[in-house]
Length: 204
Image (cartoon, rainbow, N blue to C red; front, top):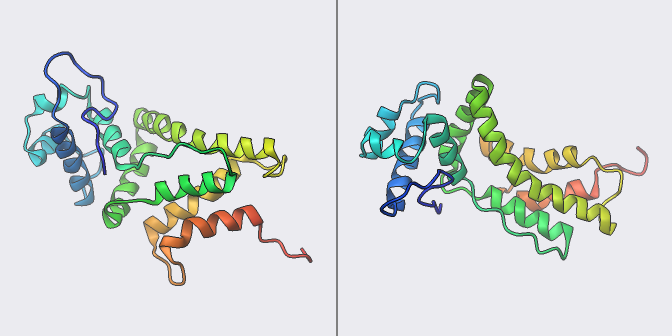
């Protein structure tokens, strides 16, 4: 996982920030959540102690806990590749494979439910999360719209439902899998081809 020094936080004037400090703070967040702490119960003090930094170091980078944790979640996600524009299938597959990448699948499976719970509880956190996710989802939406325009996809598809069908199996497998009979390394391609081809038989 590559983490920027600021990972979305506003840069303050003065000495350049050490990217290693940001990574240590993010790792502290992930470790505490994986150990069973809820986002609601997580404190800046606990994060600072786990990361081996002072609270002032955190507050120089983030205005509060929600912004810090949201930047940590953003850093957890791999960068979505720029669509090449040559094939809708190839562009969607590249996006899906990039989002399936994880440095620590077991830890992700413990952290993701914490994120979902906090989104239900905290409207501010839900808004911050939506800002991050929507920017990523829009890349896939643009590919789907292009596919409609080029005739690679039917003009009557529901873009939002199609996007949900492409992303949900990956998340489900990460949280509850791996399932018997499903090869995780091939899942992106199989999900994509199943959605693109459809599953209806001639007698449906």
